[in-house]
Length: 218
Image 1 (tube, rainbow, N blue to C red):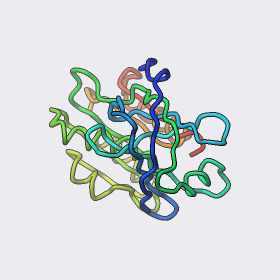
Image 2: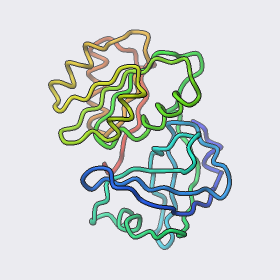
Image 3: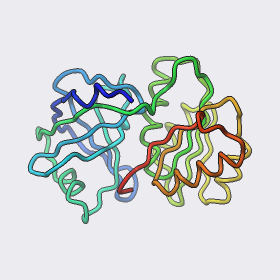
């Protein structure tokens, strides 16, 4: 893990929010200084007046103008209520970004497996791979029973993209796209990540070939 990221704070200024689907919104921020951001990482956000840190995967790529996060806005969460009430010019602090959910040196074959809002770090990775012209092959499997966030963009940027709507179709696709040499990146609820890891183990994928980003409080 990139531990040094925990020691780095960046002041963010809220710019705008954009509705995506249902109660999902993307929030855009302008950093006070260039963010040392590696595609696929998450940030630890300090919200004024609220105790503690809140973790969000960044949906933006390093090449993009604004830092963005994409999340459900649910009234029972004080953090989400705070985000929903942001006005242009409001400030908050980002510590990081951190986590090794990033492209690896000398690896070229990736299978991205996402559930629902777990697509956000893959948006970052795919935009970066395109903008930086990385020599990588990316297969995306995004399972969601309702809407597939960023489907138009991810379908355009991934080498191959699949959008199953149920567990059976998802499991079938995982088996059909199995590539022994690939690195498997898993993002979604903790339950989804654990279950997908078990499926991959049963198919012979090595533990060293998987990385995960569990969305706590999914």
